[in-house]
Length: 401
Image 1: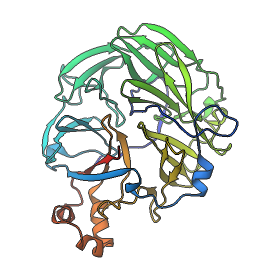
Image 2 (image 1 turned 90 degrees about the vertical axis):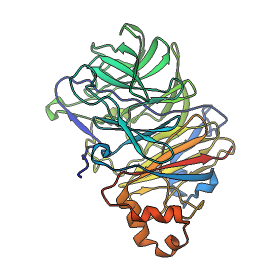
Image 3 (image 1 turned 135 degrees about the vertical axis):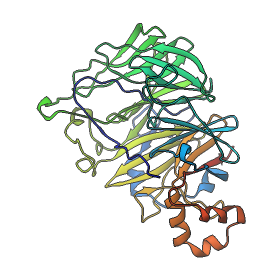
């Protein structure tokens, strides 16, 4: 069984409409940068002092759920996993599956990709799961969005604006109010965010105060994750790739909430089209938010071809960036059971972190760590029996209170 390979960057020509949804964030007491009234994460200091960061620093337990692998349940590459009651929801390119949260047994495919009356037109790996309503979203038409529950039942629908605003991602603000990100691939977008209702009527816009220059003769190259929304218990936050600020968003407010301070070592907005490839931007510091809880901010920092997972303690002001060596993605050392390292994907509203690891990586760990493997409990030793083309193993971490 062959998995679908997807590019992390999409080259686009002509008009487009893409739909991205998000994760979550929150509020609290953070470290303030010198001379700044905003909470600040010092990326340069974190990178210079990176070290092996243990899960026990912020977590108390971890469980593993290998997802059942049958022909109709094969999860595509770069999936996102969400928790809904007794289910795990898997969202990947043109597929949405549900699995039993305890056993990992495959339950069903949600709807299905296609043009049929009950099928959807578009879904992306980063489609948001709205925990407050226990729903997620798919595009039925370029401008028509369906709201689905974890059983695939449609619980609502709404229109997004289709004018020159180019709404790429969106998040729900209230029962009849949404906020959308205005993509700016050609550097002529005047708005950053748009507030609209369920009929697609624009109610308010937040201007884009930044500018750039784009040579259209080179075509349009656009990172589909350039603008992302994050949710936490009804609060909505937003961050762009080429902006150091995490914003809080309401129906009438866009306010700075947190600064990722790169000491001018990140790509400025005005130069965002000058580095179209991963190689050309490799030496810059590129932060991205994973999620925010009341006690911690989880983030990633990509530079020099590697991605480091970080955690910021909002009570002590301490930032830790994990470097476990010999890998492109540096997760957190798993000292809870001395098993696989952990890379978080999103945080639930009930203080859990969700991540996953692919089957080949599980098998590689067993091959490379025979002494540690021999000390594992039987339930974890069984994971060494999975096949290389099996579905991922979902990891659920309980955070400390």
